Length: 402
Image (cartoon, rainbow, N blue to C red):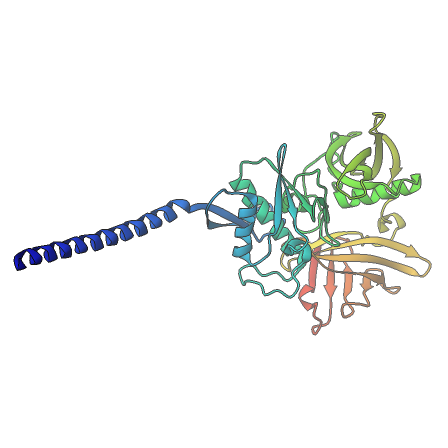
């Protein structure tokens, strides 16, 4: 009897040990399967960032990115948010030839930096650089990871992506795909470090500075004011050759009340020589000249020293544009804008009065009494400031861009 009880007890122990081992094995297998599933569920993509705004030779960096599930524009944008510390808040919507990317009003792009703490690797001292960085980086990342041809930027539910200030263009029409900062800076009429040496015209008129979107829209506005059509909205329409000249196309029309729709009514073409031509979209009329740029008041036309132009210093890293030169009974003055060559952002702007004693010397009352001295052959200017001025790092010689 005792022997039978012992055998039963021994059998129970063996059975119990076997069950525990089976449970352990099951647990280990289960854990192993979880790890395997987790590893299989993780996928890799690459995020792209561009800190060299507007450059034709950008320094694009690649950042490995792990994700799970479907790779979408929102997933990639979230990855850029975590990488950079900036809020890439977007909503993507399919369109026939790509995606519309709608930036949220509380995204860093729209809301601006504020007093947020920035990451050292992605630190920005001005809004322009930050905004071009965000738009470029998302555009590059989407282009490289998604099988889409075009990407259209909007904001806050479909409105035009618009900023109060952004050089060289501050509005991105919903109907035009985003092209990258190098494209927009490349049409900035010599501002920054992106001059365009291409001869656009059919008759070889390479002496003309290529027209840019900003100046073209201003000339169209002047033309529309004379025609009492200044209530129409304007958007960029690309480039073309009109009357044998390179021209910027500007589309005039009406926006819907919610700003989401645009009805085209007229097309304008602004040539490099300042001619404004109009074609009626409704009746299909041909280009007819409606306005001619009267000119910026080039001082060369008044036998005065030729201050007018764009100057730059590669060594100092700045360019200077002198414009709106005027001659009045009280004297001569001009306006100037100084840009950072690295990214084309505006550093400062003001006006200077030409000295009555020396027409090659001009003084600005602001910025610590900044002075400009024009060389006798008009080929360059010197900028002067006091050594204690916060703008002393701009002192030096700037060569005129022909």
